[in-house]
Length: 116
Image (tube, rainbow, N blue to C red):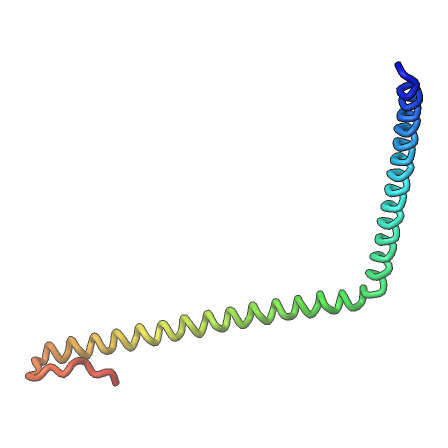
């Protein structure tokens, strides 16, 4: 073993130890800072909720009313759609009956069923 190797071996070990210590200090600092940020964020979030709680309740109430109104409108549209379908079916039946009557009476000239 030469003189160079006898000096660099312990130096390398000391540098590795210092590096490991520095990394450990950095990780501890980073973890502590992250915990502090999370605590701060939680506190801010709690304060914001307290400040805006009344407005949030208003928004929830508005949403509830809007949902109820939307349900009523959906029901009205469904009722209108069913009524329109019934009217269309009744009109089709009337046209079919008229066509059968015209065929039964033996019209000389077929002009097609009347739509009025």
